[in-house]
Image (cartoon, rainbow, N blue to C red; front, side, top):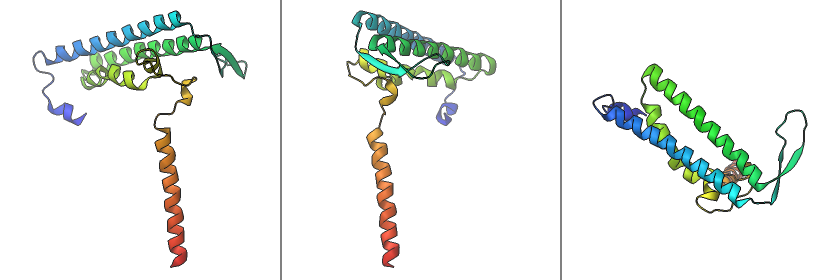
Length: 162
């Protein structure tokens, strides 16, 4: 963010280029999500997954197909893009801030590598559903915790020896 302040963004056509890239980025995200939604309906995966019920009245889990679960997740992502667009445009129009446009323009790249739907339907990876169970870098986090515990044990042993 600090490096963006040093670039003369408000001069000439630079601002229009940034706006164009932002709009193209949002359009690309929307296109990819509608493509994924179409691919979900064509695939029609009938395997089932147990997820918490949506309605707040009843507690428990419901069994739905992978296709239905993926459609729900895709709808969540589409709503997220709409909210992202509204907030970013409001900030840009109200306060004339350019940085959020630049940051949000790289979102499709990040989504392509990190969002489960993109990984499954565009990159042909197999992922566990529900997606909350797919912990990115989970092994790394576990190793860090184990390393911290080992360091504590080593320090305790050193104190006992002294």
